[in-house]
Amino acid sequence: MVGRAPQDWSQLYRILLRLLCLLPTGLPVRSVDFSRSTDNITVRQGDTAILRCYVEDKSTKVAWLNRSGIIFAGQDKWSTDPRVVLEKRNELEYSLRIQKVDVFDEGPYTCSVQTQQHPRTLQVHLIVQVPPKISNISSDITVNEGSNLTLVCKANGRPEPLITWRHLSPSDGDFNWEEEYLDITGITREQSGKYECKAANEVSSADVKQVRVTVNYPPTITNAKNNEAATGKPATLRCEASAMPLPDFEWYRDDSRINNAQGMEIKSIGSRSTLMVANVTEEHYGNYTCVATNKLGITNTSIYLFKHDLPTIPNPVSEGDPTDHFNHKGPGTATGENGSPCPALSLWLMTASLLWLLCKC
Image 1: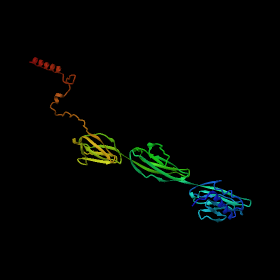
Image 2: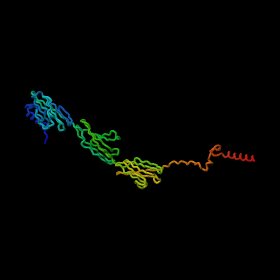
Image 3: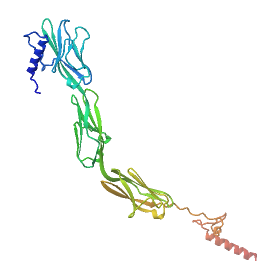
Image 4: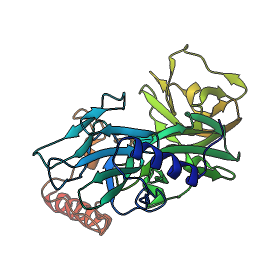
């Protein structure tokens, strides 16, 4: 259907008003000018709008019109919309109440009043505000490190909502991007996580939704330390790797893969793997290799298990040692500077003993 020109609408309303006897023949309809807004009423979508209009006396003829035609003529309702009723708190009020206002209700409304003196009109422009609502947002997505990524977030609302992207990561600080489309070139593993889209206008609280971005990358060994253990004791070797998807672990000794056998047990949970030896023997010492793999790559590292030698304690001399009398230092025992018996003193005693025996004879 071809739309009518503004002058065609004015002509149509002039005819309608005269048919209703609201305008005498020959008077111009200067107030039925829908390009002129004399009063604005702003209502939020879903609320009730009341368009005020008052008459001078009970005999006044009055009508409500909008672009679609006549809504009320006097007490007669021409509109079939059940949401529209007359608001009459007293005999001189002729206001229009529109319940559960929606966007299609927006536009100019005219209260036409025919008094005994002259006709007058009151034109009200109804503005309908709509709270922001996100209508389209990217789904959760998984990409490989180094790829380009575009996230989209679209929202409806009146006034048009402002869209803001934010990466929910402490490392990014107050990162904000005010666009429907968020472009990330050469995404890194640090840029994985949740991204929040916020659509806001002054009508009500913002609408917020989130997108989870998972970035796949090959494994990197982050923690692996050598260890030492004593023979006959248990030992544990640990290996940690950062990767997405989470890595699979394998352990090797020389060129042989280690399984859960021969007193060894492998446990891998998440990004960590441990090799446990229940009872270390001489054969367990040496070099081990931890291998971490996922669909994007492979990496490995060497971990050594060293032998831990316990300190030795010298054996004490027993009471029955036959050499004990040679080492005993009793009272009167002469010693040299280094603690050994003094040879000069021993020779003097032997000489004195021999002279005493000779003299006695």
